[in-house]
Amino acid sequence: MESLLFFPQPFPDESLYSLAVRYHRLAANRSYRLKSQELFGTYSRTCGSILPCCLGALSQRLGAGYPVVDLIERFTLLPLYRPFVDDTKYRASIITMAGSDGTGLKMSLGITASRFLKHASFRYCDRCVREDVLKFGSAYWHRTHQAAGTCICPHHGEVLHALIFPNGADWRCMLLPAEAGGTPVIHSLGRTAARSIAEMQFWGLGHPREVHALFAGNFLRYRLDEMGFIKSGRIRQQLLAAFLASPLLCIPDATEFQEMTSSTDWVFRVLRPRGVVQPLKFYFLCWLLGLDLEQLKLFRPKADYLSEDLPGGNHAVNAASEGDIEERRSAFCNSANLKCHEKPGYLWLYRHDREWLKQYVSAHPFIRPQTTLIDWEVRDADLARELMVANDRIMSAEGKPHKVTRGALCGLVANGHDFLRQPNHFPMSIALVDDLLESTHDYQVRKIKWAAKTYLLSERCAISVVYRFAGIRVSQVSDSEVINLLRGGEHLC
Ligand SMILES: [Zn+2]
Image (cartoon, rainbow, N blue to C red):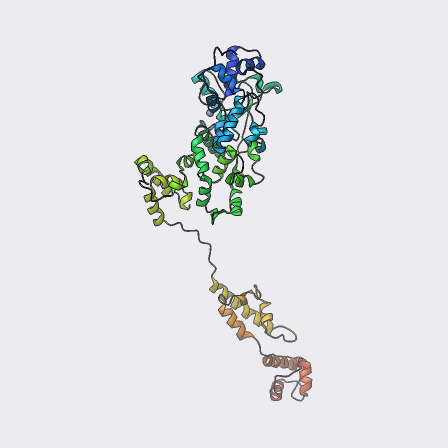
């Protein structure tokens, strides 16, 4: 095995593939096969991967300056996965990447199952290309741009482009960014989300320990609790799924995000992980829950985060400048109509300015927008009027009289019998109904009057005849009453 006579000086956040391409150019190799032999001592099929193998051989060729772990942590995307895998799996991944056979690596990290791989592309930022050429003399592939779900440059906020290798070739043609045509990876939709996720992923790539502290410290669960999605220690799944429906409409239109829109089941697998959580899913869920990079940086595990009694618990105040505090307070105060934990800077103020936050929140309680209360008195009065009209209609109806009963009255008002079940709300109407109900005696009197008028009955008619015309079987009216009623008529039998 021969040491390499030269190797490109790595640029900031440069990928291993990018270093290989630049080596290829410097060595003026004619083919990838030759270059691969020189670098890896074998034909590497994974040089273009985000998790390349054969790095043990490369490390040996590069000498003491490049231990395998350094190559992996500086030039590959394995550190992005570091917070989400245990030590055993991480060490196994390093061993696999050091060896020449990477079979099963992506499967063990859950990348294959995530189906993000099929959306992978070689991505670059036009502004990075221009600036890198000016600053370093060459464009190069940025490692963070290649992470699944990174669609916007975290440095410039510009949409990344996916390189289209010419003539159906793949990465083996050893191109640098923008050396062939590229297409934007997102279009109009979801730029805000894409930028926030890209910033979080870039930070996570460089700070795996901090992200592990977030993940192991139940950062997302704390956020759910803060948002009211935890009750009695359990996640309120239906409520959370309903809440997520709205932000899921604003997601980036890059293809990998489409893998996460058909269902929210993946959210609960991130919250209750059984296997490896994909970094993109973690950061995407952070965004869905209204979190950004700043809140990730500020989080401390709950044990000390909520401990009011910790000695020197307010020491963080000293770490924040007065200007910072004033700025955060002002932003917090100016966000009206939001619950306190939804206002910008809540977590920051909780950490750095807790006393002020407590006082402000207690002096400015969130007033829930009042839904219009029902004015039951008005409803009762309206219903009473309806009942009066209904009574008039029954009493003045053409033809044979109908008795004024509850059923007859309720049948003529808008809400039928419902109000009778709410006596507290309709006291006037219920009392009115009781007053309007017609006794059998009164009803029979009305029927006799109607019969006398309709059939021209007089006091000379037999009472049994009057009852027959009036439709009375069991009389509640005395004979003298009937005669008096008939005297009121002018007609003869
Ligand atoms: Zn850029």
